[in-house]
Figure 1 (tube, one colour):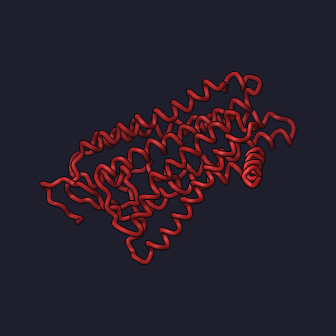
Figure 2 (figure 1 turned 180 degrees about the horizontal axis):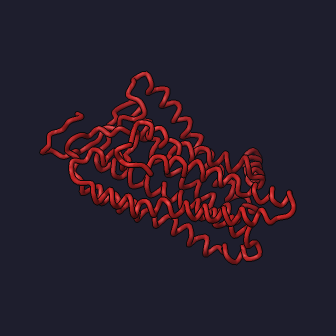
Figure 3 (figure 1 turned 60 degrees about the vertical axis):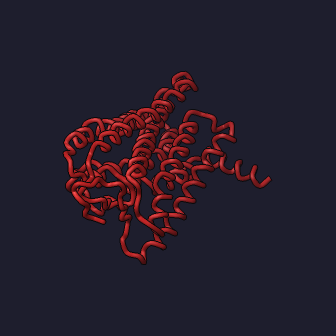
Length: 309
């Protein structure tokens, strides 16, 4: 199955997954099934808490609920396919592979843009609190979310269309647990110059720009917080940004490790790191935002009390 006839094109791919050893498949299935249930439950609780508690009807929590919904969709694009691979066949159709890749990049970059929007929201709230209501109006929040969702889909569509023009005739074995662009480009027997150039220009721009916006926002926030004379005021300002900053480090740290390196250096270790921003980050987000946020704790508490009654 690995080496194919040069005259035939690939109609399906084989996803090797995280491990090829049979004894690892069931433990991995149980682990990722539990992680998937925790991810869905945690993010769903965040959405329900924000919608049910009037005190959480603010731009910050509106963006958080959209981020939770995106994380649910993002994880669902990846984990169910992994679970099937652990227990049965590891093949995925050519169309199915491109479809999965499309949604991975569309939803993953939506997460990235939403994190930048949330950083901007915290910047306005701390650095320009008197104009916060005006700047972060409902209409502007909707536009920011619409932009955060539409741009990543156009970005993803561009890379899928370019990938669809390649010929995969040497091998159909993908050394990954999902359809990612780097391992697929290594399988192509046609020129990947245009794809590589697009990744290094447009792809890098779409990936790095939100991160730079986040860094700039937090530099301005840090300067503003250091000017606060009272220790209580500084602690309150830092506490509102601490959870978001933790998510940013976890998400972007793993992404930059995987994608900001030459294609020739793509190894098995990158598969493991990919789990951080595809599965682990989406699972930990609800805990990070709820455990370090008093308002969210109260909202979740009210939601639980309402369910019990």
